[in-house]
Image 1 (cartoon, rainbow, N blue to C red):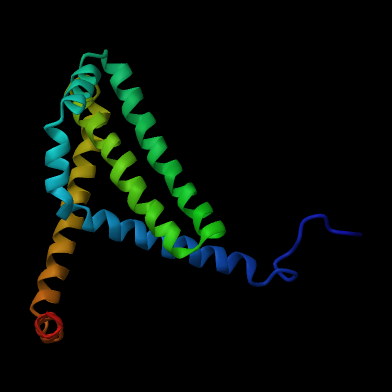
Image 2 (image 1 turned 120 degrees about the horizontal axis):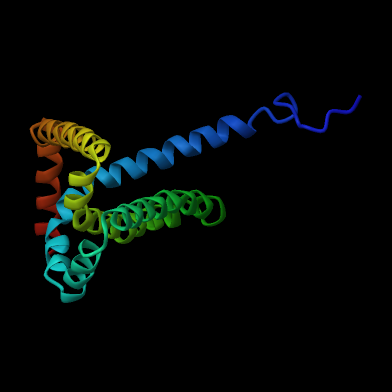
Amino acid sequence: MIDSIPSRKNHPYRFPFLRWIGRIVGFIYLLVTLLFGPIKPIAAWFQQQRFIQRYQSWVSSFPTAWGLAISLSSLVLLELSKIAVLLTFRHAGWLAAILVTLFAKASIGYFAHITWRAARPKVIEAYQWAARIDAWVETQMAKLRAFRDRWSHLLKHHPGYLAALRAVTILKRWLH
């Protein structure tokens, strides 16, 4: 009897390779998420733009269920952007996948953030389950920030980091 579904025996590297690609892209996505904090000046500049302020007031004027639906839709777009990263990696390589990751995080991620920030007060007041989820997410984000800060502190105080920083400074002086 002929098996119509290819077995792992016929394709031994197919699934492990995809698993490793997923892990690497996931790591890059988390790294970009952890490093997105230093881009606060750009986010502050965007926050002062009139079209962002109009968008936030527009979303906050919606009924609670609509605000929740728009927030969840923006999160779905953010999750779909991860598929775009995988497809970009497959067809265009690492550099393009990293650029798409940065673009998705900076554009769709920011859009999702400001949408939730505008809808959040009404949604949390109306739905207790949303308040619990929001509190849990804030706790996890605080843990991630603490992890990032701890590793950043360790890296900055490592002798190798200081030596590399001195070498770059000397190289800059030497080139100018």
